[in-house]
Length: 71
Image (cartoon, rainbow, N blue to C red; front, side, top):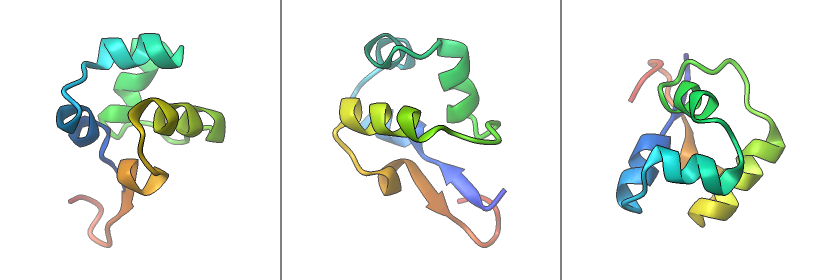
């Protein structure tokens, strides 16, 4: 896939665990895990907005485009 999810990188930079983020955003840990591993086929704007709000970042910090399909 050409869209690369960098949620794991942003979490590490903020020293935050996936379970903590799930609690703050109100999303199940399973759904965040699917997103984090790049297995998600889609993401709702409301989810992206909640993640950006809690992580104090921009959508481009979480999602990047890569010609080769991975970074």
